Length: 122
Image (cartoon, rainbow, N blue to C red):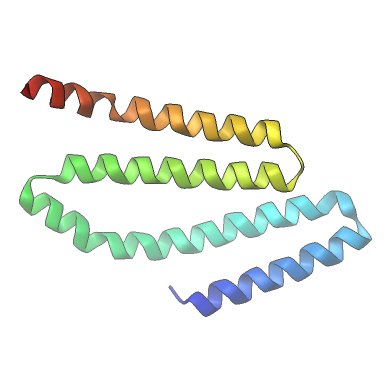
């Protein structure tokens, strides 16, 4: 993953969004959303390559389930944060708060089996 590629892509997306905001304001949020999805896919690809050594090390130590849980929680947090930011950019702060709440509840429900395992130890 090249940070200069990311910054260049974001600047191009910004220019397209600003241009469309003047010419056709109803399409500006769609271009921002499309740029975010494309950038997210690019970043996810780079992130997955970086995770391979971590997953191998976790498997060798018998911690694969815990690392998987951590990565799922991270994915939920990032997805809800991106959704919340997009909602705020479109002027929908109430929807942004709901996206954040949904993420918090999803992460909590994801962690409940781990909490039960911890409680069984005592």
